[in-house]
Amino acid sequence: MSEPLLSVRELKVEFPTRRGALTAIDGVSLEIAPGEVLGIVGESGAGKSVTGAAIIGLIEPPGRIASGEIRLAGQRIDHLPPDALRHIRGKRIGMVFQDSLTSLNPLYRIGDQLVETITTHSDVSAAQARRQALALLAEVGIPAPELRIDNYPHQFSGGMRQRVVLALALAPQPELLIADEPTTALDVSVQAQIIALIRRLTRQRGTAVMLITHDMGVIAEIADRVAVMYSGRIVEIGPVRDVVRAPLHPYTRGLMGSIPSLDGDVARLTQIPGSMPRLAAIPLGCAFHPRCPRAFAACAKVRPTLAEQDRSEVACWLYRDAPAASELVP
View 1 (cartoon, rainbow, N blue to C red):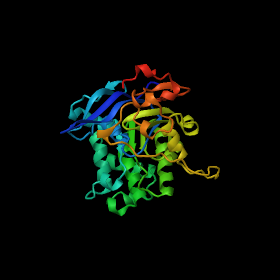
View 2 (cartoon, helix red, strand yellow):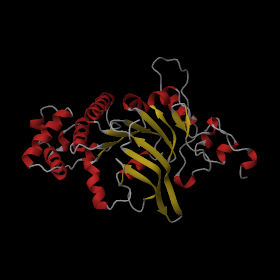
View 3 (cartoon, rainbow, N blue to C red):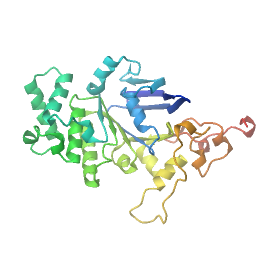
View 4 (cartoon, rainbow, N blue to C red):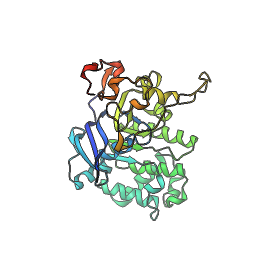
């Protein structure tokens, strides 16, 4: 992999409460190269969106980054003052959220919002910005952009609004695009169109992408690598083909086994028992061990770290020497 555009090292995000700090992200490390699509997948509550919010500095107080570092093209950005981070957010890092309607101001025309975004991050006139806005709308597949540019958000369908949101995110030509569940609220045919659009635009522009989703089908379609998260930690990360075809971690195997097969060879889908633990009740050791069919003594006592296995990395005692029984604290 080439020199990473985004580098996250041992990221830890906490939310203070009256009963103590709750750790939502615990030691997450990842890298994304220019032009690469990294998929982040996991159940609701795994920490996917919080990771994305931490990278762009949108953790709501009293939440905070407790430790670790985030670097963009070698520059550390997690400790920057709000004004400096605001310049990076939007200009160098674009964001696409799940709900396109709440991402757009309902009181302003689409064209006004695009022009404002372009003029904020570029030294161009309003007329030049409008021409760029028209070109962007055409690029993301809005039909008759010269007619639609003066429409309001409510005059667009969900899929078309998401295209507009993508145009807004790409208007300043960011180096990194974070897409948080960009297709969840759309029907299947529109999902495929948005996925193809993100893939085409980012490949053409060389933009790095962090794609946050719970849909392994979307990951398999667009991502180069995939990171599987569980309870605020990455449990497996590797090339998407390897993770999809031969998952290593029992949690990843459960996710892949729960996807229906069109060839009908699987008589029964895999069911992962139980549910994701609450932040206030994350178990010791491997957080997945209460639900894991292959757990043993070490899993409940000692947290495994990511270790290389073939072309992937996996945090599981099945692939490395587990602590001896005498080393485990009762």
